[in-house]
Amino acid sequence: MIAVQSVETDRRPNLFHFTRLQRPIVDRADGIYLWDKSGRRYIDGSSGAVNVNVGHGNRNVIDAMKRQLDRVSFAYIFQFENEQAIELARGLADRLPNGLDRIYFVSGGSEAIEACLKLARQWAVATGQDKRWKIIGRMPSYHGVTIGTLAVTGDDILTKTFDAIGRPMPLVPAPFVHRDHDNLSTEQRGIRYADMLEEKILEEGPESVLAFVVEPIGGAATAALVPPNSYFPRIREICDRYGILLIHDEVMTGIGRTGKFLGGDHWSCRPDIVALSKGLSSGYAPLGALAATQRIVGPVVETGGFLHGHTYGGNPVACAAGVAVLGEVDRLGLVENSAIMGELLRGEFEALTRRFPFIADVRGKGLFMGAEIYADPLAKEPLPQGLNANLRLIDLAFERGLIIYSRRVRGGPVSDNFMVCPPLIVTSDQIGEIIAVLGDSLQALASELDLPVES
Image (cartoon, rainbow, N blue to C red; front, side):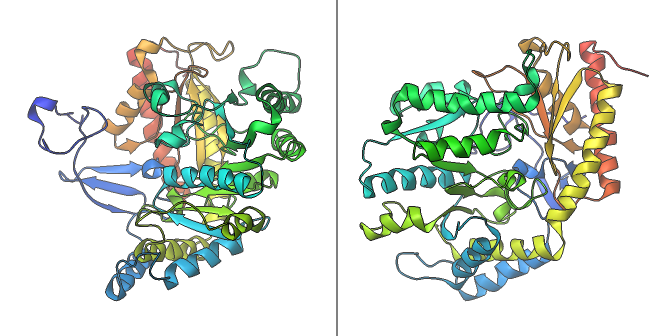
């Protein structure tokens, strides 16, 4: 068992964390594994924060960064262009669909979404649509922790404290079709949830609505929630009908995570603006990007340029990491491996639901997989919130050397969900290792909470 130190014996009194919880000090990492200072090994079943797509310790990425460090570590983007940023922008444009070939670099996911929101608004002003300012999000959802991104995030735990200094935006329900009790088919439910966007647009006034921001496959707030196939075609149709921009948050789902280069590629869905981060640098350097069409960027450039910028935007070392990561994604066939290993992971995951009937609603694509813990899966009845079942499962898995991912949201459907998202280099044997430890962790959870287990 791993002892969690109390704040009174804090070995790092100057380091400010999210919570009082302390974890072991990491010592080294390689492939899908990390080791702490005591030598204990952990399976990275969450790819860090669902970002270490090419795995830890990749020598090609590290060497590319070292080569760039030997040349120049920093050059301010307003003073110099750099070859790595130019090459990375070209590499992304070659891989992205639908003319998304205008690239703007930032340092992370929240920054990427913030840049998308600001670009959308500046486009509206530049094209004489000043009255458009409302950006509709979903409940629940997660788009970042800056004031701007919290405005479109559907999670009361994160947002309520800061509503007074931000400007909360309208929200529509995320498509939790598996929880609905009606006589509609899955595809009919997808249409119904998409139509909720049109209803919200009409309620707010179409002339005031600027954009709809959405995760193609739900991330931390909804644990890999996959919409019905009917959902995105209708969403695109509605956005076009009212002249509204469609922004895809691909911070988690991009760069091969779901078995396609982008999560939206599963539906050939045509966004106007895309946010990327996490897997773009695979955790080797802080990096994010905005990708947009010339239709959006052109008017902004022509009217004076994008009113935005960061000191580390387009940093040459970070971009060198990004270029190398794209190279490794291609060289190792990681988009394809994500699809193949994802099917194996899904099958093993579903087998666990037969052994542990309190686990249900396995969902996701590629190596982006989630499920929920229920008191009654058929009735979709959650366990009492006070049990914090999802957080307890995280701790039980961690004690057994497996890292998985979970975050409970408030304000949307209450649930104990969790995610398994290993690096895209994972092998079939390693999938088996992950499932074995997850099974042991679920067995321990069942014993603690008196949940049913099938022999």
